[in-house]
Length: 256
Picture 1 (tube, rainbow, N blue to C red):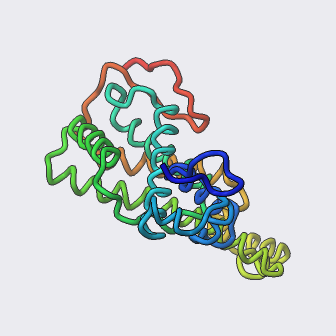
Picture 2: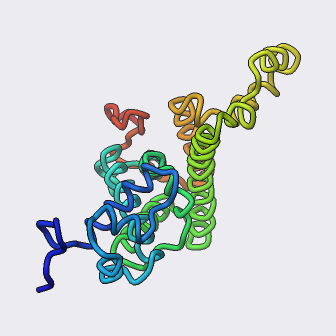
């Protein structure tokens, strides 16, 4: 068994390294490096490489951690994904995904990387396949539905997370955030009076930063519309139907 590093009482584990990497991502603004991790964990860089052959492999593990967190959040919103209404399960997955990644928004730029084929990805794709089957979609329709669903979900999360991250970066760089991303209040009032629709669109561009709760509400509403459109006339009723709420609670079943 290798010796313990000086001033450490336990042996270094892959989980400890990944957890520290996620902590450093969240703390920002710079992404973690092998050297920054080694310093925080009080080990030599070689100890990190013993568990992860590259920084990319480590980042892959951190991304997997957040996806697992999204799964836990989804099950909190909808505890019975195999028996609930498929439409509401897809909304729950989207909401759980958004909440997890917004908690770790500085990591979001790595979110869309192709995940490794492992038990988690197999289970996730298996659940989605069963949901699309439950909607009565053909194989080709299910593939197209998955493409539209994933594009909306991941794209929306990347936009909101990127908006928050960039605003934080600009704010830390000397107050440029206000000049770059926010309309002057006087100009906003003038625009609202002369072109209210234009003013509302301007507000939507900033919503992830200015009003995160409203941003989440609109995300859920848009996602539900998309999923209902994908289901179309093929949607099959279930004995137990639920409706995802923004606080993660499910109301009493509604009669068909």
